[in-house]
Length: 285
Picture 1 (tube, rainbow, N blue to C red):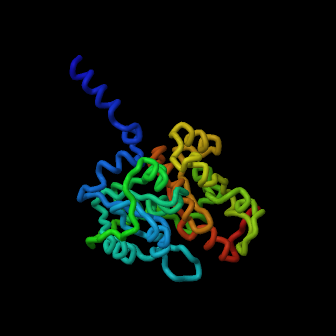
Picture 2 (tube, rainbow, N blue to C red):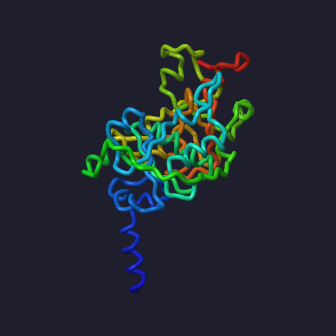
Picture 3 (tube, rainbow, N blue to C red):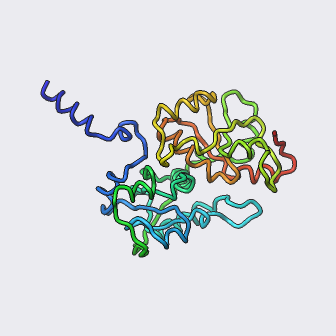
């Protein structure tokens, strides 16, 4: 009985997100591990924002630096090229990597997916991002962090990425759901855009903003599950995510795989930019 009581006490002391297997970390929890050698904190904000102020000790990765030049913007460079960029910033696949951004979740979510795709096993997102850190009165600075370069060894997991051919093959299949993370106006073709108006045929719209609460923190697992249940996104289905460039798709990938334990989730890296640029591809409005 004594051992059981001790076990129960330990359970209640463990943050609930760790019990659920979520890769989310609070400002208080981060402050306790931030100086450990195996932890690297990554600002996913813009270059100008990082220069103005960032969490003390954070290195910087701008997601746009990870994209190749080509007719379709925002498609990933080769794993080897990305690994070189990450390593130069002191990021290794064997470290605990903590991400944060401006509070939208877009950029940290994008990096979370990229790192997962490249084989990093311990990646977390700071809940509430910069606002939560400041609210906890934790240190910030404008001085760039001194970086010790390391080696990032990419171990690509192709089960986490979808090609245009795979998306084409998924349309109309009852065991696959395609989620568009854009706004309803973009999805329905009501917003002003130079792109072909509409969405990939058969896709459903779940805007990425629905993952976070008013304070920029991840909603509870129960709230999130309700969103996906209502849309028919069940755990037995393959899920393919996209938005205009698949930047916004990242936070939904994080939500499904980390908070809700969906096991078969992919991001279509070419996204709507690639899809609509191919004249033979149909779009729905």
